[in-house]
Image 1: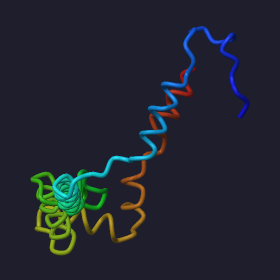
Image 2 (image 1 turned 180 degrees about the horizontal axis):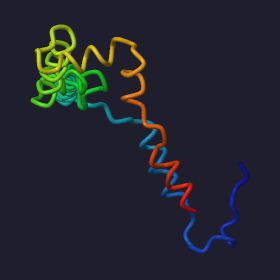
Image 3 (image 1 turned 180 degrees about the vertical axis):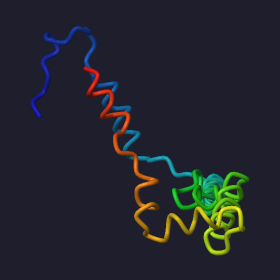
Length: 129
């Protein structure tokens, strides 16, 4: 590294005093005490334990966990009750709806045309234009 010319320096004093301080600092590097090193190691071990505890507890549940927690809600209980009631009415219908069920599932001509809408509301709306 080339030496600096003191005439180019904005400060009139040469840097020899500063160089002497740097040389003295390089000659005797600071050595931490054993007490300081023990405190640093204790803090590091404490931080490792804290982070290990945080890793065990998920911060935000995933998609599956949210779905499973939704199964415990009252809305799902209503859906299950409606499904069971629908199966019950479909498998063993009461006498009041047995005629309708027979009409739907019999495949007769009257049953097929009775439930078919010949023209839908969408088609009617197109015909009005």
